[in-house]
Image (cartoon, rainbow, N blue to C red):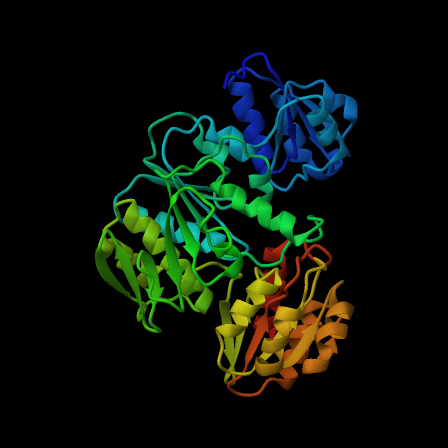
Length: 447
């Protein structure tokens, strides 16, 4: 892709957008930017762009600005249904994602991971397993560094592990991972997608350009994932909690079994610090990918024994008089909360709620009825959640996270779990899920 002298617009100026601007400038493009936030909220970014002599548009997107371009790059999270983007497409102006731009300059194989839940953990696990196996591996995309930072054409890396979202996949054209991993699909982002099917279609674009020479790793237990298993071109491997698969990995309740190249290997989970059945799925997918790309079984086992997981994802915070407090602020959708509740045998006091994603709450009903002794609801979604789920267990509403934690503490009994797992995004009350998790942890540590 020759960028020299081309007028290129970068839409969205968070960390990835800024890195994309720098990359384009270094290759001789005439770069301009467009950001919906006002300049005052992004002073450091504005200063960096000014130093690069980049034309800037703040506080919205003007049609004329978009229609003057030769190429438009969308940062992750920018909605391609924006009127200015659609008008540009009508004029045959190419619109691609940062993921697609980076891919066109990358010369090494990619392992791309997507799914509603588990993407980050699985990406980091694969990266660690390959590093432990003495591979030169970079980890980027939605986790770690933006992928564009790996697109310099140098030979520093042998393999890149990339976490990709549905938003990024919407804007691909030639993007082709050597290995694609689809962990699961449950309802999410219905505040962004008109229909659940639109979200599913975005996810399965990960297979769009793969050939029979590539591989795909799929969740055998997920009916929506399996709907596409026979329709894709790459060689398929499966992971399962329920079936002893012939090619891939499965779990017998204690160990992970890997069947690859006609051989069977066993990986023990006895020493694993990772909690939760969802993390068994993540590890099964990671083991297939890491072993297929040449990491040794010994290196993989060492990572399983040592990998501690992510902050804000079923993170143990504290025990107080026999009550265990867990921070699962990253549980921002219904499917994620179901997996978290499945991870506990003891009664749970669940703190949930936040910015309403308008998703179906029905999959939570069985688990709230059977496992949640008390539910404490916060945020914008608390009224709808109380209306649809409140009759299943003792339910109260709280105005703040601090109040919710105190209410949980007052009624928690020895042996119970207090779990923050919101099933909602955080933007009604917090900057992001990390801030929400930190506020929860601080409140727990003050008890």
